[in-house]
Image (tube, rainbow, N blue to C red; front, side, top):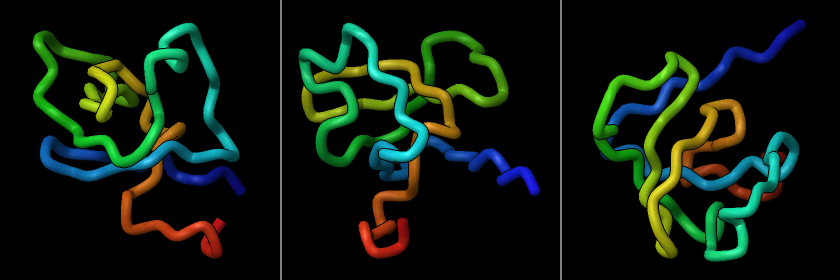
Length: 76
């Protein structure tokens, strides 16, 4: 069974999903650290992408790499 890709709307609070997170160069400045907020992107994104404002800055993310911020580690 394939897990459904979560859909996050602007205003949603998210955290990185440690099971699916794909690190990149932006992780050095804090991408994926703490709780991020989904914001309106400056242009249309792919259906599985969202624009997230992390405490360290803003980055485009694939929805499958994120979890609702209400998720606790014991749920993983």
